[in-house]
Length: 287
Image 1 (cartoon, rainbow, N blue to C red):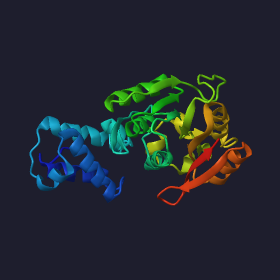
Image 2: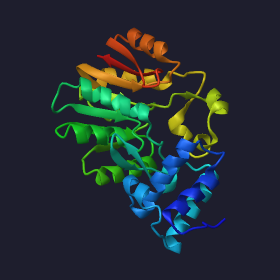
Image 3: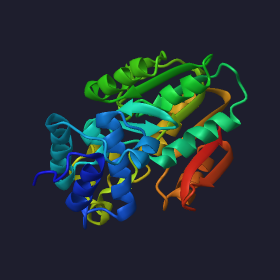
Image 4: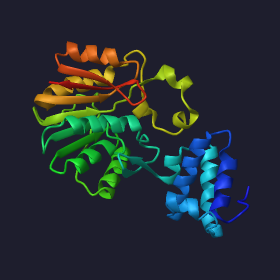
């Protein structure tokens, strides 16, 4: 299907027709704004007043190809190759999860409670690198390290390090292995958004997540849903300085279990916090 009018208004109508029934009206509006700004460098404000702005055939083709991908279920962020996180732009592809607003809240909590001008911070399971890069950007004197199990993942994170003009120490690490690349008492803060979605939840998830985002970063076996929390908390008892803080993003149904786990492991000042949707989503504990 071709775009009937080679104007911004024509592009908006085309996107609306293509995505109708697949996305809500508000989601379609977001897609329209994002694609027009991404492909044509026309801001949201200009889009309102420049409806008759004319576009070339090659410019229209970009929207047609984007719609083809989105109708097949590819998330918008993977189509355009970037996502917003804490007011910054991060490159993303199917090797890494799309950053979520809940993770922004976790990072904000860390920044609000941190009392050091130059903390040493470790992010475990870094994905796109949005967590460590945001922390380093907000705390320029901090010493930030991050790790992930895959070099393909770290390539994305390193590209975001360059994009956001910061310096992070990167490590390839499977946290479930016996490898211990860090020193005792090395970090003031350890933060992680580990895999926490139960495999049994797959049936209730959107296809665009299931078919496009990396399962390795999403899912954990039902037989041991706290595997990553227990392992990371155990490693953190070595890697954290005395009095250091551990931050986790969690499954909304696992708040009490994670708190109980950390209590049993003799962490103190354990706090469970809800996200803006009112769901248990974050835990902070002190060694």
